Amino acid sequence: MSESEPKDMVPSPGDINAVVGGLLSDLAWVQPSRQQMFGYKRAARAILNLEVSLATLCDAAEPPKIHGVGPASLRVIREVLTTGESPTVERAIDESGQRRDIERRRALRQQFLSRAKVLEVLASRGLRVQRSVITAVTCRCIQSGATANRRLPSWPPPAGVAGTALPPSPTIPTG
Image: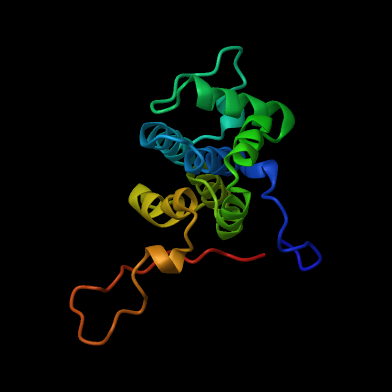
């Protein structure tokens, strides 16, 4: 994000998985039953953990089956892929009366990327990373709407805590 762009900008459609995953997460929070809520959360997690962009997967006439994604979630995906937004999700949020809470959650996940986008960025720079690192650090923050500092242990660890050394991470070249 450049210095001239506003901080409250909607995530770019370049990371369509993060957009769709976020909308499905929003939809989960406004569901009247726990069963429906968990269904949408599962769908959001499935989308955020995909290794390929939804735009690539859904190029075919019939989109592939994704474990955890049902017909209602597929409707949201189709809306976002065709229009860039989901009237279904916005209507559900308005009807629930939870717009303020959802907007707060959206603000918390503004700077996060989906797994597919992280893999794309790393590949474009010739880097590889273990799958567990991407899943644990990046995607969980997006699906919960939490910031990384709230979800992950503090670093560096407190003095005297054994077994907390991390292996060196690859340096991402700049420019």
